[in-house]
Length: 234
Image (cartoon, helix red, strand yellow):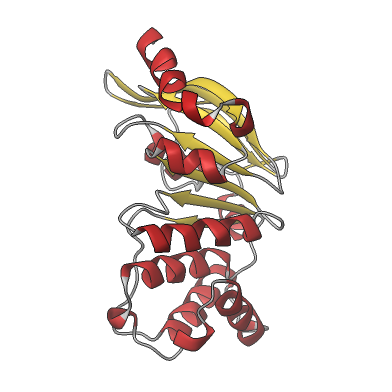
């Protein structure tokens, strides 16, 4: 669904992202795992077309996002680590606004918003002002705006950061439901949590992908050893 080829971003002499390549497939959750500063957020921003790569390419459905950005953004849902939510809007009004912004139309907006509210368990909060929501529900609103236009690809930056254990469990359950209809890429620095919900893990360090593996290939008791073995070797 989305293919990344030799993607790089340089800021003068610093290589924030260095020749990264991988593919995302519909029906799975892939995770970019790495410590803060590894290049995860920069990578996600290039995948959305928000940041222009120094070199390399991003293909969505075979088309280069740099050449067809406006068209292809309709196929992508993006959740930043700190979602830009409008506190003075209700949940329903915000999602309606985001649907119109993403699709440039009002046709089918009611059905699309209702569907996003239901999938993110927000139907009972649709008339609540965003300012009144807890961190967990605000994260759900962020996810709802990322899927309200029915994208094929979801890019989620630290979706479980700053949540309590119950909220983390709820978000992980939601992601497992959403993956059936989307190709999902999640960035995170939390190894144990990523191991529990991601199908594949890309270990990122100093802007490079050091390892790619199925989560099931790493025994839970060996998580830290696996992480340290690759990062120490780098």
